Length: 326
Image 1 (cartoon, one colour):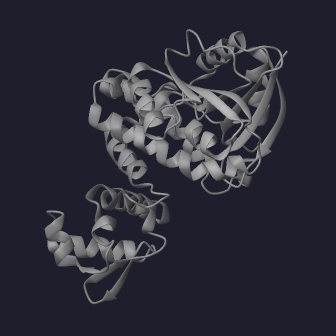
Image 2: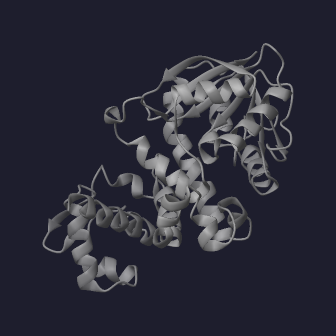
C-alpha cells in the first residue's frame, strides 16, 4: 500500500506544479479557498490535496485551511534558482499518455509510447509545441541542478562539443564557470534555434556556436571534449552504438569522450535515491532506452571504438564516464 500512496503523492506534486500553487505562495500563505479560486479548483478538493502534500513537507498549514510554502517545496516555484516545476509538469504530461499501455513494454520489450501514439517520443515533440517547450525547459532545469556536481569533479577546459546539447544549458553553464572553455551545441534544428537565442542572451556568442544536425548521421569535428549528457540512456544498444561511432569518427586521437549518465550498480540492492532502476524502466516505456552498469558501458564503448578509462562519481545521481578512442 505504501507504493500505491507514493503514486498518489507523485501525481499530486505534478498537479501542484502544473497549477502553479508554489508561485501563488511566493509572497506568503494563502487560504485554500484563495488558492482554489486562483487555480479554478474545487475549494474542498484543493484543501484536501494541500493537506496531503503538507504531510510530505512541501507545504505547511500555518493556521486552519491556510497554507504556506516550505523550503522543501520552494523548487516548485518558477523563479527558484533550482526550479523543477517544468520537469514535474513534463512528467505529469507524459505519464498519462502511456500509463495505460505499459504492459505492452513488459510483454514485448519495446517502448509503449509509439505503440500508443503511433510515433516515437522525439517525433511527437516535433509537432507538439506545448509539450516540446515543457521538455526542453525541464531538461535545462535538471541540467542546472546537476552542473555544480560536474564542475566539482572534472576540468572542462578546452573546446567542448555538446552532442545532443538541447538548448545549450550545459555548455552555457560550463562557459560561465570556466574561462578557458569554448564549444559547440549540436542538436536537431528545433533545439538549435532555441540554443542560438539562449547563447545570444547570455552574451556567449564569441565562445559558443550552435550547429544543427542529426547525431545518427554526423557529429561536428574539432573538439577536445565530446559530451553526451543523458543521451545514451534514451536508446537501445544498437542505436546508442551508432551515436558513439559518429562521435568516434569526428574525434582526433587525443580527444576525450564524456558520457554523463546514472550508472546502475552491479548489485541492485545498492541503489540509492533516486533509484536508477526506476529510470531504467521509464526509459524502456517511453523511448526503448535503458540505464546501464559500468560493465555494460565498457562493452558498448568498446564496440564503438572507445576505451573506458574511468568512472567519476559526483554528488548528484550521475557519474562522468571518461573514454578515449582506441
